[in-house]
Length: 311
Image (tube, rainbow, N blue to C red; front, side):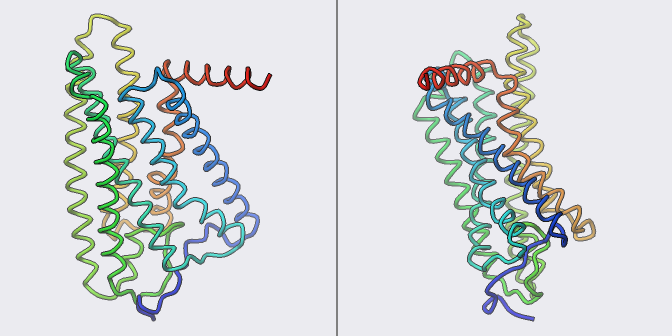
């Protein structure tokens, strides 16, 4: 047994013992990571380069893509490297940095999704006041608040987690450093303090979820009153993808951090972790661009511009 002062590294979960399966894991995660980089990179480029997309909705979408890139980059490359080099080790500072960055990006993304719900509410339910309420300065302040709240939340949880004495070994039953798995290594009741912080954070998160749900209740009520079928279709195409992203992120992350120990098993923990940490950054670009005509047009113009420059 060792305590946290003598720990120099942690051992992450190995997907498989066979080299062939480790290479399969590496290839699968590489494909997912490249898809996330490509999808989010395209959205960022399109929003930056096309002045028609310089609106609050696409400004927040750009921030969402940046957060998605950050969250998946914080955890997936290390897991890929471990599989490629047949190792499970991550250094103590590396583990702390991974938790800090991942919690930062995920928390900020959750705050940003709440802001995006408010943006959709104002756009559909109070369209005449949209320009006044969602001015450029207000949008920047909201985005900055989302990033700042994410950083403060990550700093609090990381500092508190690694101040807890650890004496149950150094094996983390996850493919990245995750707070619930680190708490399992605690040798005292001090971990209850971090559990308390997680519960408080979950209550705040649930409050944001209630705000999002109430916003969408009013949005859908207003949409169903629209006389134009085309207007209803456009409103639903903007709102339903956002609601799908929120539902996936909230349900899986809440289950990962708040589930009782009786429901904990390595296979279930792994599946849930993949669903809230790897899947959203990969599918978000597809969800937000698949039914978005303006974004498709911007991407088409961008491709045509690149082709012209190459000729």
